[in-house]
Amino acid sequence: MKKELLNQIIVTLIFLLLVSVPFGMKKYEEITNAVFVGEMEEIIERYGFYLEDVTSNVGVDFVHQRATVDEKLHHILPQISSVGASVSIADFNRNGFPDIYLTSSEFSAKNALYMNLGDGTFIDVAGEMGVADLNIPGLGASMGSVWGDYNNNGYEDLFVYRWGKPELFRNEGGTGFTRVSDEAGLPEHINANTAFWFDYNNNGYLDLFVGGYYHEEVNLFDLSDTRMMPDSYEYATNGGLNYLFENQGDGTFVDVSEKVGLHETRRWTLAAAAADINDSGYQDIVLANDYGVDEIFINRGGEYFFNTGQEAGLGFVPKSGMSVDFGDILNQGQYAIYITNISEAGVLMQGNNLWVPSRRSSGEIPRYRNIAGNMGVEIGEWGYAGKFIDFNNDGYLDLYVANGYVSDEPDTDYWYDYARVVGGNRNVIIDATNWPAMEGRTFSGYQTNKIWINDGAGRFREVARSVGGALALDSRSIAYADFTGNGSLDIVVANQNQPVTIYRNHTNPNHNWIGFDLQGVRSNRSAIGATLFLHWDGKVTKKHVSGGEAFSSQNQRQVHFGTGLITEVEKVEIRWPSGIVQVIEYPEINQYHLVTEPIEL
Image (tube, rainbow, N blue to C red; front, side, top):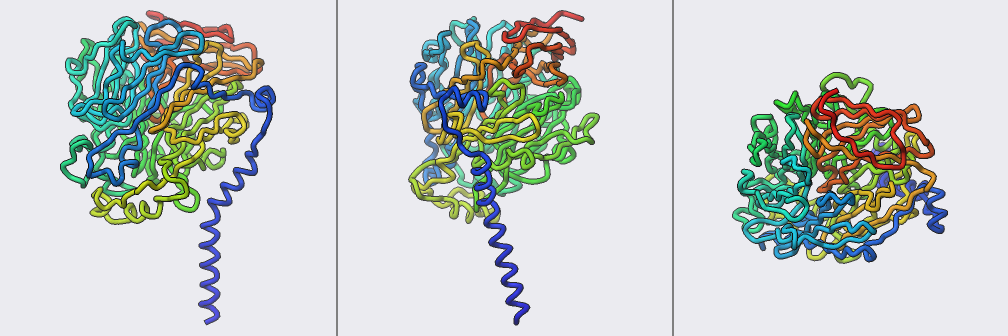
């Protein structure tokens, strides 16, 4: 009897300990990341930067509206329509200043193209440019966009992915856009939540990856069957197909997805990005999958993609992958991969992943280990976009993470009902009619975005409440751009069913920087996929020109490096997609360098 009582006491203590761990971790974070309150100059002196919310002062008044889907899903509408707020950056008219494209999702709601006027303000020109009215019954609801010069004419073209028909717009010399979706050969329907441009076979023409979330046969606006939810919370296999459209060089695209190995699985892909992670000269693909494991597809010479997620170390533990970004966080010439997930104290602690190459990495397949906990960037909240940004130009990449799922009626909670359905068997979870009605309840809402600054010694510290970036909206997508050309990276945060937020970044004036604006010749004109290695102060920092990254977002085309107090850069090595390697010695700091790909070296 005494032994049974002792066992009960031990079990109870263990249970209480497990339950208290998340709360203890959160309390520890609050203590170690105490808020510093001071004037902007004091904050800049302490952290190296300060974010000022200038949204209302720069001419941007955009408010995202979520999609209204079939009435059979209205009881869980905030969950179904929890995405669609996105932001992408491009200098569409080549005036030297990056512009902003924002998507909305409700039928009749307009997307916006904010043209940068060069003085820190913007004006919406989407209507006159022909890229505003894209949320149309029968055609689809916008989920995001990416820019790339698919016809190599020097102007960035616009691809908008939807729950419905994807749309491609050709840029007519910065004066307007022509819809070319049909002649390009794009499909009639994809339930897409991610896309990016890249030249997968390095032939000089940009190809297009589009990731499916819901099955492509599901019409969310005219539902024929409510058995369209994931068939498992951890190992779902009934998601949408992922697509690779190969650019034929004549304005048309061909679906080569199955031929190159991308139809191997049907996971629920929420985010995807490309980078050359094994230095093969070809860009590889990393997928962040909801309801399952994440995946890495190694590019074998532009002919086939080999799924190496498990062998690389990523594809073992199922989580809720929502964002993918690459960053050389230690300035060692190697990429870490950051993938956001869900962390809700006392309920679900998946934790975000920071995958760094292990010492066993060599050859075609890199190996990774997760050190998010060790570096202090594991415990976010309900994370969406997670993006590497050098906020303070000290030469070390920091992290901005968008948080918050559904902010509705305060002091209510949907988690208990959610846990009941996702914990059920396949026949329960797959049918939307089994999902309890939300009834205006909050679901991991009113959360604060995270800003982790890199101390350069292997740790990150959370400072959002100190530096002005503690946004408590349902944030989704993040993009950065130097809107005024002063070397400081400003950010745009797209918030779901809420107004967009624009932060102007005030950095330490003593911190130096350098940037590169690349133009391909033999490579694609956008230079997407070009990899740069900056040699400075005994370090080597790796970055690349991206065609889309994180969650439903795309940064400015120029590649930006901070160098802190260092006033000289030894060289930059540029590896173009064509295979040409270009070296520029001692480039001047504190300016952007326009670099045109040489014909040969």
